[in-house]
Every structure is written in C-alpha cells, then in structure tokens.
Length: 265
Image 1 (cartoon, rainbow, N blue to C red):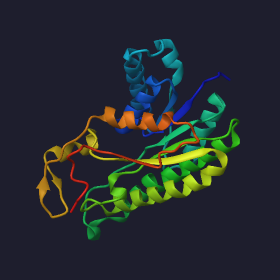
Image 2: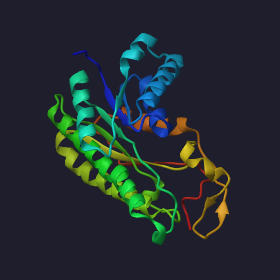
Image 3: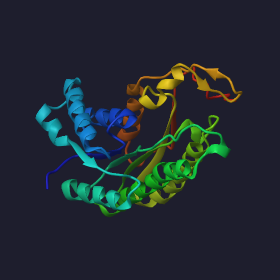
C-alpha cells in the first residue's frame, strides 16, 4: 500500500461546489478521492483538477498530482455503493483524514401542497439519509484507524437557518443536516473527530444560474440576486480542512455580502 500524508474524500465532486473544493484540496497538497455517480464526468473533472493544481504556485509535479487525484464512483442513495466506496478507500490508502460531505439535490420549487412523494423522497434520500450514511462510514474508519481521528465537513445551506419560499423538502433536509452535524460533533469528541458545517449562499453553479435573472423572495416578489465565485467557497473549505483535529469550526457561513439572507422575508 502506498503511503500518503493526508487523505480527503469529497462527495458530489464531479461538478459545482464539490469539484471546486476537491480541486482546491488537491492544490493544497491533499490526496483527494473525487466521488460521484457519473464515472465519465468524474474522470473529466479529475483531469481538469490536475491541470488546475499543476498551474498553481508551488504545486507538486503533474505526475505526483495524478497519483493524488482519484476518481471513485458512489451513489449516496445506495448503501451498498457507499460501503464499496469506503472499502476502496481503505484498500488503497488505509485511512481517511477529511470528508467533505457535499452530495445533494435541490428538488423542483413547489408550494407545500404541490410537493409530490417522489420530490420529498428524493430530497430525503440524498440530502439527509445519504449524508448520514456517508458520515457514518467515515466515523467508523476514523475511529478504527491509527492515529485515530479526522475531520468531517457537512455541506448545509442557508436554508438550514432561513428558508426560501416553495422549498419545503430542501429546507427540511438541510435543517436535518444541521442536527446531524451537531449530534455527530458531540459523538466525535472522544475519538478525535471534528465535525463542522459550512452553509453556502449563492455560489456560481448551474443550480443557482437563475437567481441573477430573479429569485422568489419571502414577500412574493422576484428580485435578481448576486452570486459569488466558487473559489471563495473552496477557500473556506480549505481553511476548515487545514485546522488540527483538536480545533473545530463548528459552523461557517459564506455568502455574497449583498445577498438577501440576513433579514430575509
């Protein structure tokens, strides 16, 4: 088994926030498992990440980067797939030091009475159950490995604190993620596992493209909203990841300064 210094797992890493954060961790010197459902998209993202990290100031040689950027498929809605992912990490690296628990979905915007069982189930399976079972496997590995411990960063949302209209399924799951984070942070204390959460505002991804034209506000109006570059989100995650396990950022909120979040409604 090869020896690596710091092993990170990023779920939902084929695009958007996950891809940006996995790429930033790679450039910061981590060995990074890029995990998502679509193998082809993952491999393309890994190739782009190697190119980006190779161009960063002080980054290791490209050959080393290729050794440190690994694509592994996972469907977080499938427990057998999660088990296989962690078996692969254990077999290849023997440990896990960081989990960025990022995979998630945003169901179609609908008022409460129009949400379908399928909408609800998809949100809960991915955003809440999937996040829990990935975190559970990370806990098991981090407790068993020597030296013991690690760091888990759950991707919450501003919706964990203040909802948008017509987002009941998403909001409920993100409130659930906040509960997962807080409970797990207590359970992790005795075994050196630091658990925190990042709540991200309008980052420039495909999921938020519409807000620049107009987003539904709490008063029923439509207003354009600003977005922030993904590099700022990635920088925040890297800042959390760099801390020693005996120090925790329990909650970090990053958003465009003028985004209507404080005072929403």
